[in-house]
Image (cartoon, rainbow, N blue to C red; front, side, top):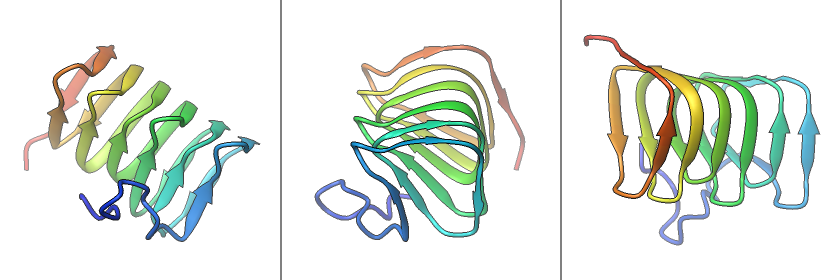
Length: 116
């Protein structure tokens, strides 16, 4: 899942919600997405979702892989893997096959792990 650029910016993503952008509504698609701003709504992506360190999502995220460096409130579901960086702040239930939590990440909620 670590397909981000070497500077951690996720610059390979076709869709980027910038730092000064606030989006209200639901996002769907099949390309990787990087959230550096705010999204208030559900995200349903058949690829990877990256929530950058300055990013905030309030809603449900459904994707193949989810990498969080910022803040998520709601629900996370990954058909493969969820990664929480040391800067992640999660107030959400999660469902995934694989979970990686870095030392320092904050998580409040429940986790349902599916078998492979």
